Length: 126
Image 1 (cartoon, rainbow, N blue to C red):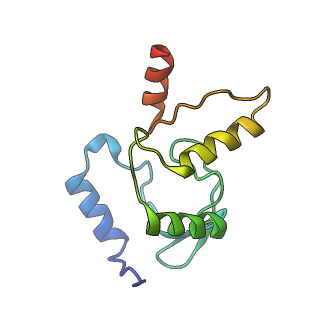
Image 2 (cartoon, rainbow, N blue to C red):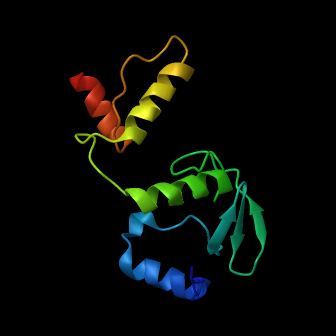
């Protein structure tokens, strides 16, 4: 896999200002440009290491670039990238079965969705 060439923090900040809505701007005067992650650490374009204590939206609870997850993800992407839950796929039913095994009190049925909004809407409809 080719290594991505980084254009620098100032250039990224300028492009972000040009292409993003203002309400999505970062909260820092001098924000670091994060270029890679490894488990609980993220690194800026200068190689400075930060411990990622962020616990909120878009959090990576299993660590950045967790090798076990990355390996399995690549294997799956090489077989089948995405389908709707209307089709039969073994990974979907394997996960539903595993959730039933590990959830307290058991989980008789699973409803897979893409986001919290879909989950809330589905819960209301169910």
